[in-house]
Length: 83
Image (cartoon, rainbow, N blue to C red):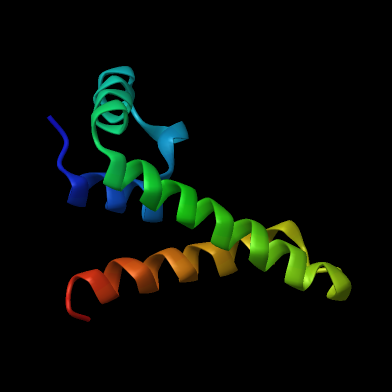
């Protein structure tokens, strides 16, 4: 069974697209049971969407937006680990 820390790493690094079927099922099960991880995922998505909207005036590339979203995720993960 995945732990909350595992979920945070998946969200920040891989996303669910690159996971095996078993890992996706574990992720889905954990998300159904854990309100904290559901809230965390919602917050990460909101940050990504907000960053996209803010950057929309400068016509950023999709890659730049993905890098910005990844950086936000990494900072959140590192902050949670005392870094």
